[in-house]
Image (cartoon, rainbow, N blue to C red):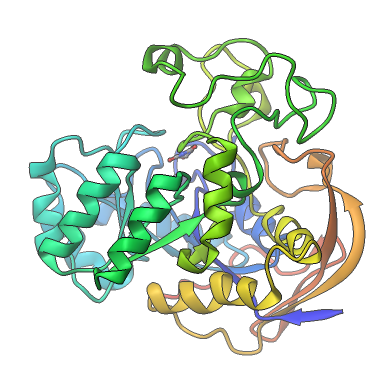
Length: 383
Ligand code: DOR
Ligand code: ZN
């Protein structure tokens, strides 16, 4: 049995308020515990989005009643909330800026709207950007000009990791995270048995790479049953991109799930929303990679505990650890998960490494498939 510190996920979507049929603070934090996470940072692209005191309090009230693991809530950067967001900063996980196409209403196309946030948000916390490719480059330039830390969410491309490496070498205050789906899947692999014969195998007619897909195709939805399950932002990339991420693992500061649950019915609809659940699959996937000698246990601890704690200025969790049977082999099954969304892109994958027990602040919170703490046990780490 391997004993590890409780993992921290800096990037989850818990869907409450507004879309609790996909997930809520109870099911999402139960999934977190089952996956070995004792702390999650919740994204603000809910309905309504979290961008002022009123909406912030709506999210925190739900969290206080229902969360089973520890947490903090992000604020979203909107077109005119820089001052109010800055005033709430000490109570928030960090500020999230959506600079590219994604799910939800929070998006800042116009760079003049970025300025007040870079000027006003306290430098004690990072600004987390959803920024891909060229907008990521612009965000790094903002970081250099304003001399403030930005954390780049879910990087997926070779050009991104190489530029971040170069920016770090220049002393620019930039950190980044990568998600398992960008480390283990490519655009030409089927994440569901519907498309291919199994998992991780090539579909008969490969999906176009993201460069080949047109925006209108994406906006119109991909339609055919099963294909919506490939939709995620940033999109799955090419093998060359995946290889570049693995080759530059030392440049990656954090692992994050970007747990983005949508129901199977929604994923298989005419207009599939982008996003994959991930809380219950990150650790087994990484432990499997560890057995394959692609990374070490120290990489996991560094990028899933130590670095997120440092980057987001998060407190220690006393008497908190997880116990993992590193040699348990099993198949990933959505039916065994706590997330409400009812599917996983890794269905049927054979993995090695299972979370057996989670102790959170002195209490046994999870053991062998059972959640043992009640809704409301989770604490807001920014109080
Ligand atoms: O695939 C995604 N889903 N990417 C995002 O940026 C948002 C997320 C969601 O909230 O569903
Ligand atoms: Zn996200």
